[in-house]
Image (tube, rainbow, N blue to C red; front, side, top):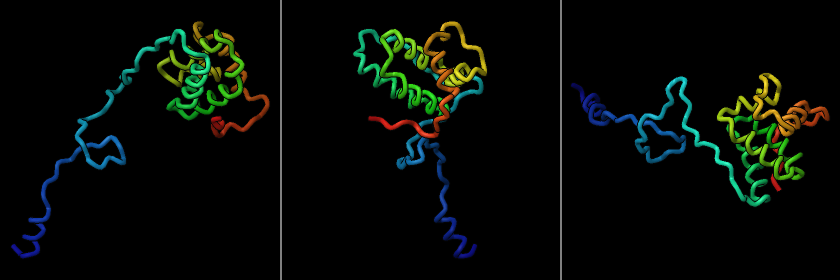
Length: 151
């Protein structure tokens, strides 16, 4: 064995491969195998209606939830919808909107219902869904390539 081979053998050691769930993970902690079996969705906590919530707090929460959908299409549609209509909603309309964006566990369902690709289930077929469908038609031809500013 040559001296170079001995040096390389000494320098190269077996390494344990660990998965990191973050691109910026520095410590490489062992989180185990994180995966979802095909056909199984992650566990989403059930929607609990918030009774007695301050109306300003409710509007702020709904604006945040409209923006942070996890799906760009709905983030754009719902955030521009919330910006345009939320301030003028009464308590019952806020409740309907809250249910619409929080009860379905799949954002694609909301997208398909609002765009008319799938029929809206009776529990979501109401004045807020009608307003959302009208908003999505974008009859005034506004550019909706960015979420509105927060202020």
